[in-house]
Image 1 (tube, helix red, strand yellow):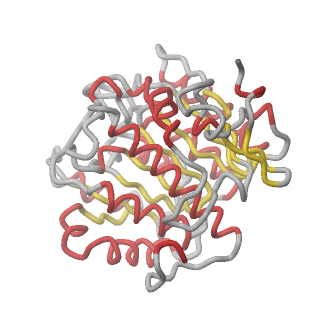
Image 2 (spheres, one colour):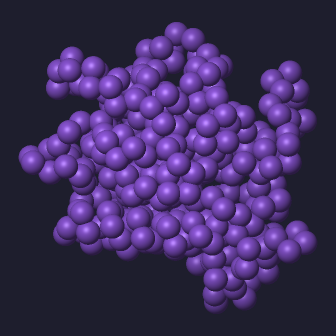
Length: 338
């Protein structure tokens, strides 16, 4: 039985999830959160798209299976999010756009395919949320965003800088997307920053080069020192009211919270810290696109990395829906009143 023929939650013209009170969550096709395919709806506020590509990895492969892994675990998502007091699938049309296929044997061709596919999708959907795949995919996605919005403030959650120059003579890898994006003029150099950086580098020059490319670094140690609220204040101060793209490498988290990734680094953020940061910045700042990358199911344990990845998407969607309604964050309110 196709998802199209199953009973769905409807709110006016908005088509939501398959109704889990009538059809068990483990039944039916595995779209993200059991939402409609994009061809089943007309106007689309947010399109969720997978990019199963990991040819750019430099260590453990497997992120090409990330989109299907995250989708399958997203069956757990229910329609109401108490953390934002929002039903994100009822107040905006969210649809699963399937996957953008990319050549696994030719990185530059794959990047061109991703750019073409994301541009076409962005013509139909107001916002894109992308599930990778490795971090190489951020470059073509930023090309798409910059074509529509001009240079973008990038808020990059990651254990690693991803502003290296090349690997083995290859300019396009999961460790180079933000250098290439900066060189191409895609990012706003006054409003971009890394969050959660930690671990060893090749040399001290990595930090100097990163700064020249337009990024401010907010390390994992600093996050520990001043907490989520301090981090959010710094992000807000840096981005201000610029259009913002949020790129989340799941290895920003400590491996105890997200083991299913290709280049784990100890000493990372907790899942609670990341969810709160995403919830807040997507509510308080003008987000134009999001990616969640580097989920590698072969290294996951009991699906905890995939479950966290879909929760990141849920918090972002909830915050975007609430911002559309003009709501502001108030930390003094009870959870269900926010």
